[in-house]
Image 1: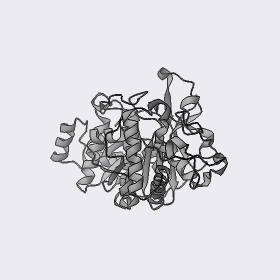
Image 2: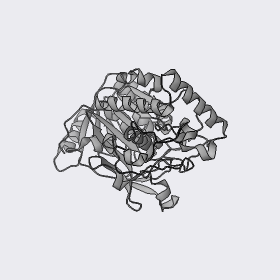
Image 3: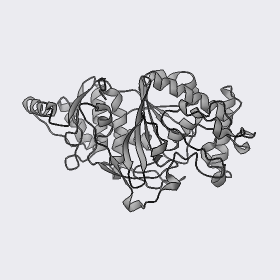
Amino acid sequence: MDSEGQDNHLKAYGVTYWTLEKQLKVKWLLNYKGGSFLLPDSEELQRECQIRGVTFEVISNSKAGEILEMIASPSQNMEAVVLEKAPKIAVYSPKGLQPWDDAVTMVLTYAEIPYETIYDEEVLNDALLLYDWLHLHHEDFTGQYGKFYRAYRSASWYIREKKEAEELATILGYSKVSEEKLAVAKKIREYVIGGGFMFAMCSATDSFDIALSADGVDICEPMFDGDGSDAGYQNKIDYSKTFAFKDFLLETSPNVYEFSSIDMTRKRRISKTTDYFTLMEFSAKWDPIPSMLCQNHTALVKGFMGQTTSFTREEIKSNVLVMGENKTNGEAKYIHGIKGKGFFTFYGGHDPEDYTHKVGDPKTELDLHPTSPGYRLILNNVLFPAAKKKKQKT
């Protein structure tokens, strides 16, 4: 899985997932040749790799033993993590056609990793209990319809989505979309606390935390929910209820395409050609979880924009781990934390191979980006729940 040895990094994760589905165990060799996978050899597996265009090497049992012995050496920042079971994956996404694509569903489809789509009704009816891993689609949990009001309030898709969201909230027994979305966010919080793994990108990251922090507070203006917001609502925000963020200031204008000061999009001073973020290096033996989530064939990953592009460092809680950062801008791109018995990862930006993906833009063709380091980070998170649990030491 290093840069020279692999023709299709993304489909390699699909082959690994396919092997786990066969109820076979896999060893993930952290920091060995870009985070390679050691799989039990068979003609069927070799054929599957060839069909999918995945580069592989057949080695003897003695060679595998030598590699594992070398990895186990205290002098090597490597570890062999056992993957035991193919995780059951859910993507939180509305059923209808959206005017934008979702990087996670695209890469899962490309890697041939199966997933199921769920939305508010399923979440509120405790369907999350059936899944090991949940991705939050490009979503607004605050009930402000993505803050698209100024630019798209006359667009047919915006009018349709607002109407459908209001109808769904009514069917589910809520008088406002913001109240219904808060209930969904709280169910997701329960899922994570109970041991689930949540992965979110773009606006699902900060809008999720904002919704939780504004529990019982009306932060929506009349064009969103039909009545005025609470007076002085900024002072009523409860940061203790969030997963990752603290001390943020909400964007009060409905005409500004921004939720809060968490996002760095408007504060960035960097060009596309110099926009990269660096992955942190962790001890594979002592901190296998962040090491797994950062496995890649490069430590320097191309930046990419989104409604929520990246996170203000000063507004990230001290118990949340920054795994990817752009020091030039003082921003975090990729963060991870523990909540109760579960885990969450927030990844800023919309599409790792489309720098400024806009509403209505064509979707990215991953056949053109089979070795994408930015997309690899998503797939690291997909496989993480398969790992045999090992107590973290730091």
